[in-house]
Length: 572
Image (cartoon, rainbow, N blue to C red; front, side):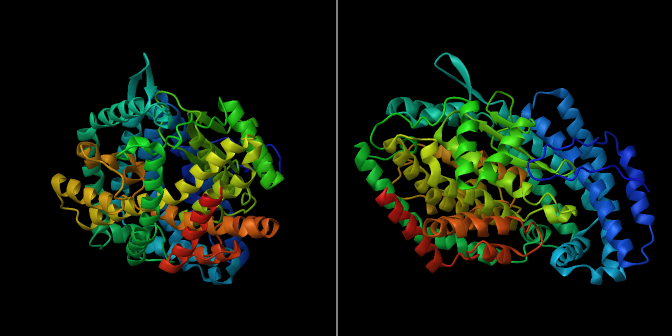
């Protein structure tokens, strides 16, 4: 049987663009043949796995481009139609065939002879997938995928008038870094009032998503979607109870440090009350740090910085840009946020973000570059599964890149004063994000273990979570209406439930990596690359260990890492 060719990517080599299918009828025969094909030997099985990986890579890239094109412009009718086609016609038809293939692999007597270093982890996930599959969940998952795109559409259409022109919310948010406090306050209110205009649409959307997810869990024999999601995501290295413990550790160890940092910020700003619009401005009243003024400068400076960490890192991102695999600037109609999208058949990554010429864009660019480099370093694995990473590992590589590149930011910010301010902002962010992650994750646990909750109960519990992880020095009085619906801004709650705690684990790992780098740069980078190259062939704990750190979120470990970051902030 002849299968579509897949280009084998090599170091620094321009990729070959595969011919992607456009209709289900083009790929259906390949899946049918895989289902029927007899397997008489280990060699037969290995070839079968390779052929399956090739066709699934092509289909996966087809789906990836549908998502990328829709993200680029939610108003593009053709992009909407293509995305709807793959979700409604491709995914539902593939699901039962993939299940048959998984069953065939699990039942094949030769599977026990596969190289355990490459396939044991895959076989474990296949068995888990087989146990969870229910035919009645296929249409529910299709409905969920179609509905989640509505979230991006709602936010992509949010504009506010500033200085006589319309701005996207990411563009307007840059004003929160300016020294003029009254202007910051006005923009903060404008942004939040604009989000409130779509409160009912967002609440209704979430209700529908929650109901369908709960139905999927019930169909599979789970009492709640939380427990189903943990199994579906293959979380074999930790439990829901571990996450609850993480929440408490963040509250006990990180929130007090932020209270101290915010108290100092209030004093330097010379204000009686520290308000949310005071958090992103320079505490000494200076204009925002200007690292770059446009997309080209962001790319060029960042690539140069990445090369200082390792020449290969910069070369990878430069190659991506040359091949048209970056979409960096914000614009109306564009989906919010940033992501890296693996193109599995092309064996190249795609980098997407909404740059608005702020220092935060540097963090986002380095984060998504970490994802891209991670995928690039594993693209020679022939099996698709080995190029698909667990979120806990993927985010370690991305957040690790944020902090490791910080050691070379002088290539981006040659002025020592600006460099110092930028580093302090990055280090404070590495701590500030941890309680927010705990807030979102704890909220999710409650949402899906109390699926019958009312809107009033949801608002009440959200506020409880929010204030539990918010430093007491930060004054939100009079802003209660905004606070009640602040969770609407977190796209993970809508699009990828329970995909958020990983950022917390990874942030701790990234701090540990950076601490190692400060002591031994060469060894740390060697370990970092070695861990990235493992792909999805080892457990989370094994990959973290290969990177020279622990998968640890005990109170003692968090206290140790937080003290290190706090000390670095003081010494900057």
